[in-house]
Image (cartoon, rainbow over all chains, first blue to last red; front, side, top):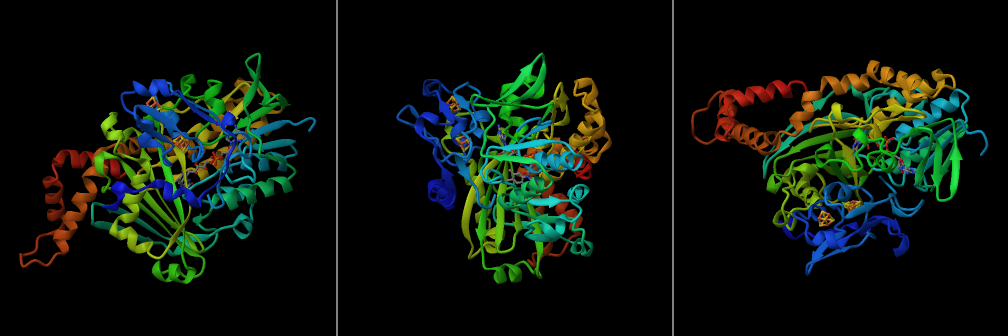
Length: 96
Length: 436
Ligand SMILES: Cc1cc2nc3c(=O)[nH]c(=O)nc-3n(C[C@H](O)[C@H](O)[C@H](O)COP(=O)(O)OP(=O)(O)OC[C@H]3O[C@@H](n4cnc5c(N)ncnc54)[C@H](O)[C@@H]3O)c2cc1C
Ligand code: SF4
Ligand code: SF4
C-alpha cells in the first residue's frame, strides 16, 4: 500500500500557521536525552513529523507543530518541555 | 477591566457556555482565549449531539453555523479490504430540535463567542494565560507575562491539553504529565467536494447529513484506532482516533509506525476511498482526546476554581462514538450555576456543590454507567479480531460458492472461533459490548 512511504509534509501545506521566532519556540527538546532514549515514541506519535532522528541526533522543528501535546505524553524521559505558543501564534485553523 | 467577578480560561464550548450563563445572570465575566479569532485553535469531528445549548440559547439551532443535521448513522467494522457497515435511519432525527448537527469549530466557536459578547461578556482573544495567581491556597486570578487580572473565581476550560492545570498540580494526583493510556490522539482532515455530488453520493436531501464511525481492523502493528466521517455542507470531515498506548515501546517500531499513517490507512480502505473520491483536502489538524477512566479524573473544584469540559476529562468514547462537546456545554452550565448559587463564597467546601450537580446530571451518570465500556475500547480484540471475524463470517454467509448454505449465526460463530477467540471470551466481551 502507498501508505508505507507516505510523506506527511506534502499534506500539511493546506494548514495555516503564524510562526513565532526561534527564540520563542513553544517546545524545546533536549536532544542529549534522546540519544539514550529506549523508544523514540515522539517520532511515532507526532502527527506532523516534527521529530526526526538523523545520524544519532534528534532534529526537532517546531514550525509544523499543530500544538496537540502528543510528544509531551509520548516522552517519559523528560526531554520535551512544552508550552502553549504566545497568544495568536502557532496553528490557525479556518475549518477546525 | 475593573471588578471582573469570574475569569474563564478557554473559549471552547465549555468555557463559553459558562460565560453566557453567568452573564445572563448579571455576572461580570472575562472569557480569555489564546486563539485569534476564537475557534482558530479548535478542532472536533464534529457532531454536536443533543440540545444542551438550548438551556442558554433556546434558538441556537436557527442561528448557529450548522453544516447539516444528522439523519443517518453508520457504524462499521473495517478489516484489510472488507467491511461490514450497519446503517441506522431514524426519521425523528429529521425534525427540530435535531438530535445531532455537524459543525466546524473555527466557525462555530467564533459564533458562540459572539453570543457571549452580546450577553455582556468581555471576550479577550489572542491571549495565552501563562500561570494562575495562587495566594493562601486560593486561586485569585491569572497572569500573562507581567500582567495580572484578578477575579473572585476562575473557571478552567482549557481543553484536552490543560497546561495550567498540569503546571499548578491541579490534574489527577498533581501529575505534571498525562499517561499514554489516558489519552488518544485525534487526527482530522476537511475534504472539499462538490455539494451536489456529496448529496447524491450519500443519499442526502437539503441540509441532511451522515455520521459514520468505524472500528479499524486494518492498521498494521497492533495499533488501535477508530475512524469517523461526518458530512458538512460541501465538505467532509474525516479522521481517526488513535490509542497512544498501543504503540510498541521500542525504537525499531517507532522508526516504522506513525500516527498520521493511520489516517492514510483509513482513507485508503476501499469502503472509505469510494466515498471520498474526487474530494480535495483543505485542512489537516490534530488534537488530544482524554480517555481516562472515572477514577483518574481530576478534582473538579477547589478554593477559587472549577474545571469544565475536556480539562475535567469529560469525553465519552467507546470505539464507536466520540462525544465531548455536549459534556463541555453541560458542565459549563453547571459550573455557572454553582457560582450563581455560591453567593460569593468560593471556598472548596462551598464549591463541592458542583460535584453534586455533576453527579445528578447525565455527565457523571454516563461515566459511571459505562465504566466497563472504556475498558472495552482498550481490548485489542475489538480492533484485531472482531472486524476480520465479522467480515469473514458475513462473506461466507453471502458468498455463493456452490456449497450448501449454513445458518448465518453458526457461520459467524465459526468465523470467530477460527480467529482464535474462545466461545467464553466472546460471551464475556459481548456482555460488555451490550452496554455500548
Ligand atoms: C478529532 C476529534 C474529533 C472529535 N469529535 C467530536 C464529535 O464529533 N462530537 C463531540 O461532541 N466531541 C468531539 N470531540 C471532542 C471535542 O472536541 C471536545 O470534547 C470539546 O472540544 C471540549 O470542549 P472544551 O470547551 O472543554 O475544550 P476546547 O474546545 O478544547 O477549548 C479549549 C479552549 O481553551 C483555549 N486555551 C487553552 N489553554 C489556554 C490558555 N492557557 N490561555 C488561553 N486560552 C487557552 C484554547 O484555545 C481553546 O479555545 C472530538 C475531538 C477530536 C480531537
Ligand atoms: S521520546 Fe523523548 S527522549 Fe525519546 S526521542 Fe522522543 S523526545 Fe527524545
Ligand atoms: S505538539 Fe503535537 S504536533 Fe507539536 S511537535 Fe508535539 S506531537 Fe508534534
